[in-house]
Image (cartoon, rainbow, N blue to C red; front, side, top):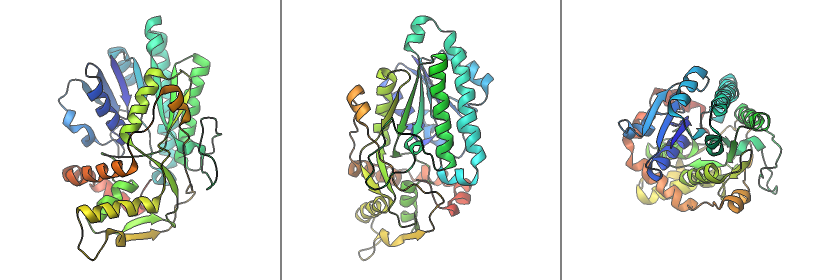
Length: 354
């Protein structure tokens, strides 16, 4: 079987490709990625000569290119990770997010729809288009609100989440109007290997090890549902094989943590593994900075649907996952050095994205 992945050099996309490559050894993976700040070629560099993974540099908006890829490779699954995904960047460059996440998704799925119409009935029965989205489309929760369900209304609060909400609606409409077998997943905050150094957890590790200030927005009491990226990948596999076409699945760990507690946890683990000295903690590097505009207070996911209908649940505790993540960054200094090049240094003065 061939699968077509867009945005496969991003954090979650590259972890998904690694997961699929190790679990489905007969499958070929075609990866289309624009290789911008979010799509790092380093993330799959060790597969550069692997014939089972083909990297094609390009844009999901390039309909001719997408058409050629589909016709040449005849994929059973199309998995769309391609997106502008950093909230802070969306505040400064909203047009880029509208172009990629809304228009790009439309142009991609339009070509996929035409490809689907050319398939045999048996091929149509097996085909799926999976669109990877975010819990941020649901907006922000107050302290005592119930976690997001798939039936929650959309209340996006940033250009990023608004653009992802728009792309979700486009995908849904292609299922209802054209009977394209689409699936949508809305996941909580991911963490793990190969995550962009602009994000909270990698940046905290990087700044700690370099004895730099660790920025925390506002009071640091914003709450997020954190899921280890491998657990997310396993959920996506379940959705592809067992999900109901046209359906939406929320993916989360039900592990809510305040940003400040996440940072302090990382500092405490680093204190044990690579201590500064006996009398100092990395937590002393924490610095509270001006909050970003429209910062959502709390995200929380109700994953009962995917647990009950598809038999998925997360296997990795936060303690286990964050320890594994920290050790990965400690053991991959070469990746970090190359991932913190000029683009990172130009950007990092604008703080970080969760």
